[in-house]
Length: 64
Image (cartoon, rainbow, N blue to C red; front, side):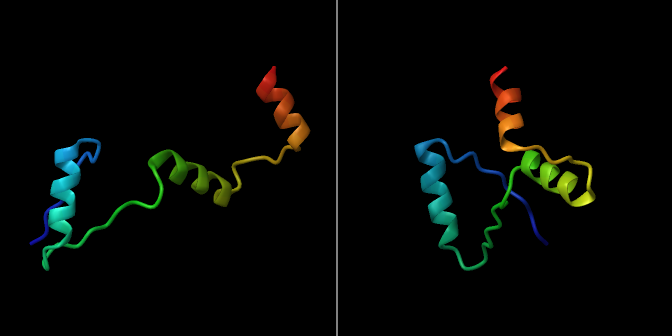
């Protein structure tokens, strides 16, 4: 049976605990490669829901 544990690694204690459990032989660590926003953006690009824009037009939109 597998369980999932989420650890917020922003505290010193959590970092120490995470380093400890990584040493255990029965623990397998799977850290996500991308966050959910990035995953959604990649999915949109692959499905063709995005449009291309030139760098100069992008800068105009960004700074206006």
